Length: 446
Image 1 (cartoon, rainbow, N blue to C red):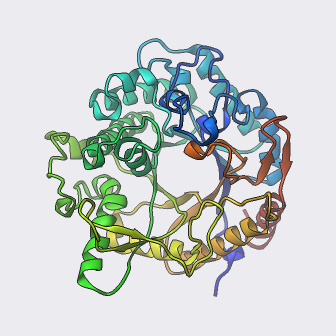
Image 2: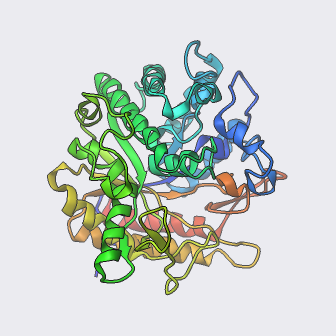
């Protein structure tokens, strides 16, 4: 059976972060407010009232963080660009100081031999655009395309590959349907126009990127969906959930159509959001790579009460992370095999753009994170041996950071951050990952 050292020669090793989770400096150098600045200031919205105002202070400490990446031996670093740092109101006048920060960051990464992999949108929508309707407003997609042009005109000479969106499923469901993330709307299925407008934004931005000779990726949180039993009712519920979580955000990009959403009670035009020609705009710019963020599978049962057409069921036989997520490494292999079966030749090369776990370090050493990474990389090697075209792996996360509605209570980092002093301390998993990268290169080359 293949193991993590059998990953292909030239396989790219990386780590990932996101702007609002690490940068801080939310009021500096002309940055405008984002929906997360507004949401985190709302009483009760975030655990213990934590905000990303300082976070890891990466805005000032990025040279130290790049030194950690270089020591780790990373090929690539996935980060996100804060839209409100570049365009404080989401459109209009460019904030030169914001662009200059990313100029410095990109140059410093390249100087350390690390390839930048930027994400253009990782949930921090400028508040001014949210005030105008946010992702429920079709205009936001066109503003995103303009923002993409501004950023890539500045950085595209040094950055070959770009991720348009991070996890539109999570942003739509938690931010617009359930209200547990910014911007805190509770629209249930009527939030789905926000999903369509994000996909439209991807298509428009992909056209901008291809016009500049740049490669385009999209990263989504994908999950294998397991029926709770062999009953037809559980199977139908699982199919409905798969359509919502996975296929809603992948079929339009790869196949040029939406999945059947009738089991969700959602009309074909997604409450009027889908206009003639939209799916061509979403699908026609080819996807050069698919980013897969994998954390766990999802078990689904038939609904036991009115409302949703499915129930989410725990997986008690699996160990769980400090976040309460089940740890099922083989779920990654299953997911990659399923993507190949569903999309066939339409599936572009894959990069694992997030994979990692939260550990309660107050009571537990770092060993569960090492076990998590090792077993998932073994599953990934098995998937590749079975035919999956996976080119790289970016663990989440480089640093302990601001974990959205959980504030600073969940630690995903290879590097411990003391949020009072900002002291960085590499963990045992950092040393393990570094040794793995060295061993893989020695065995496979690259």
